[in-house]
Length: 172
Image 1 (spheres, helix red, strand yellow):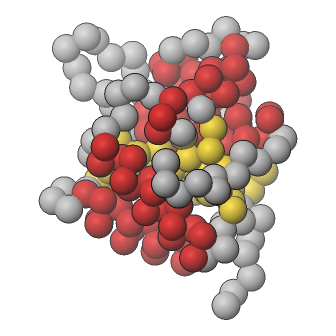
Image 2 (cartoon, rainbow, N blue to C red):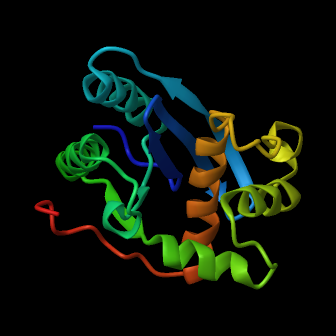
């Protein structure tokens, strides 16, 4: 088995797939992007994630607590449980942050909404500046890049809080 890197991998699942970021340090993105899944969404997401974990060998994987967000569906909750099992089998630490943790992290800069948090992330991380999604109108669906910014917000929350909230209850 290859040694793990000190990389942090954050993932934010959506109804269409997931956004991810990989960081080497607090303001040092290594890789980022979005994955679109059609058909067996959870199966496809897990396959793509497995390939990414093989490639990056992260030390820690970050997730948002599905219980802290009322609109998160059962499919995403099942996906997060499967991701947690995958990480446990690969000896990858898992840290879970609530939406409240994320909002508290960004409150000091006045960012409350997802759009404001994405804008704050774009200001703090130069590589994301031109990828920032435009504010959406009420009739528009969310830009798929927003998932990447939600994942980046998880990383910044992780570094600001300084301690892992380990996900040890797979029955959630």
